[in-house]
Image (tube, rainbow, N blue to C red; front, side):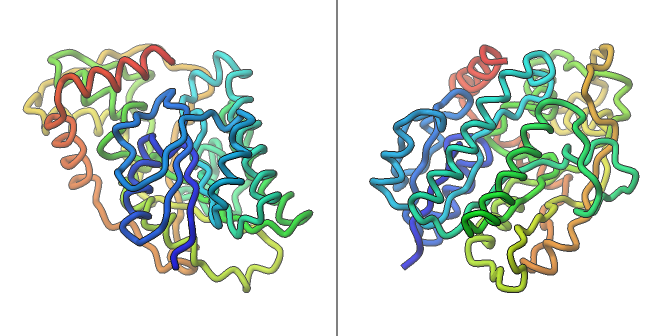
Length: 324
């Protein structure tokens, strides 16, 4: 039988896509989400859902009741500027992650899969950046992500709890409500101009959500015997840089607004200018590669947004705007 899997943040953007894939593979899936940015309507039928913050005492009851064999840690603040404005805000992400690790230890979870970020590399000297590059505490979001990774290493060394850490490129796709791409789509589709902070020449490595999910699902059965006591850290990206300005123009083209101009605003503190990831290690260990091009993925994302009802879109974005 496929193991029972717990997904924290499973009602959110990446989490809901992951839950779909896990259910399709025959897993029993348990979702924990406080719905601060996620939506219960995004949780696929067949998953057991608990509306709960990962910092709440009730998380222990979920572990006791459901006895997951694998845990995906996706419950985390994803708003970098918010972390800069309010560093204490990110501390709940860290304490929730630590609580999840400790409950996984207590209840004999076989493996924890951790969603980290390409931003931990800061302004990397090498692009595309390999896993061996140093991590840089460039903002509070990165600090908490790095600390979560460190706890994965600690729990492996101290208690034998197996983990796999994925450092994700900028992930996008249907149901995304936060981040620059989502803002560009909704603003241009509404006939307005979205904000670009800086000159638009920042680059990001854009990875379609199903490519992320494929690697996550594969990590459940990954043979770690060759890793010894080391927690594997794997980049997931495309190795390609795309400027924010080029992304903006492509969104405008897909929405029939070829001449859409952004609203340029002064850059914000804590931002990283360039990112792209070397994904050769994921290819070697997981037989993984990014399959969806930015051209195709962006077209799918825009189509999904346009096809969604206005009421559904409004609820998603109102939740995001109220939080951040």
